[in-house]
Length: 239
Length: 239
DNA sequence: ACCTGAACACCGTTCAAGT
DNA sequence: ACCTGAACACCGTTCAAGT
Image (cartoon, rainbow over the protein chains, first blue to last red):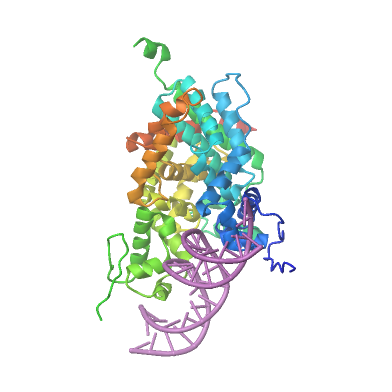
């Protein structure tokens, strides 16, 4: 009765014990290595050396598995630690934390979006963001839209990072990137001078830290600018 | 030899002539109605009353079909009409046009991202964006990142619009939305006051126009703010 | 040039059954 | 409580063959 684990090309074999937690872990790992499309019930079952239907004991269906993956990412966020009240700087901290949490699993960032308003941790997060924005003087609608934009900015920074290519198996990424770069530099120089000039920066990201910081700064700067355009709170309170 | 079209629940039957163009059209339409996951070679073949393999004459494989869908969306953009040189206002126009092009097929916006740097029209668009940003004084890296952010902002505004729910079949969307709204308003009022206050604004968008305008303004305001923080161009040119 | 038939290796999921 | 077996209705894709 030896388990004849006909393992896939990807290393990491037979994760011994089957559990909901282990399934979610494995799913996140394969999404990181081969893209979210590579995550399937049957594939996971094979990885665990078990029949596909075994997974259905631990997880209701695939949608619930994807939701659990999103929840797991959001759960790595520490709950808002500060009540220091620094205004929009608190929002920057929140987005920064979000980015670092999401960047642990760049292939699954989209799942977080589906879950922010559904799971406990996401709700705490959203409440905090709305609190910051409301105190900053934004209306209910503006605060709702900006809170959404905060999460979406984090997602787009991580999943849209130049060179991320989360949909492609890890070992092919370098080749694909090189191909994209070559395609850009091979463009007619008279029509696409900037595309050629920016080819490297568009296809790869040599400094993740400053890329993320710049992206977050862009968002925060936008929010600050919108805040300045707000009607005078004194007058609004009086009127 | 009457075609016994065992049509799906969705109306719109037997699109007569099979062609690459017709296939892409139909694919975009079903993505809009039932989400991108509902688009399949076999399903499309059935819609056209034809064998699945027939499609492979017009389209190399599914990836190429998805790429063609992305290209089609970008092709609806009119090429940059103006050389009026209004600086970052030109960028706003570009993003605005992008948003309106993408919002025609909210379920397929993600495909545009895969194709901006690959297809002709996307390259023209990117070149234009980079030109605006470089002239505005940004570095090669900044321009590349901001040009990407411009597209991603458009995508996130359209696909992330409250109430969009592009992954869910159209006829279920209202019910899902109502459920989400109810879940938020049913939260404990002491812990989640803002989530309750903003429940309606978070789950639906009653004014698309101002939603999009606000989102674009947020991005442009951020870019303008970053521009102001740039080192003095005179001094930079001298040094 | 354009389409079909048969086949292969995949999916998610249900339902009854085992221990 | 936890897992298996068999079955169903789906996928994308190849390859040889038809007209």
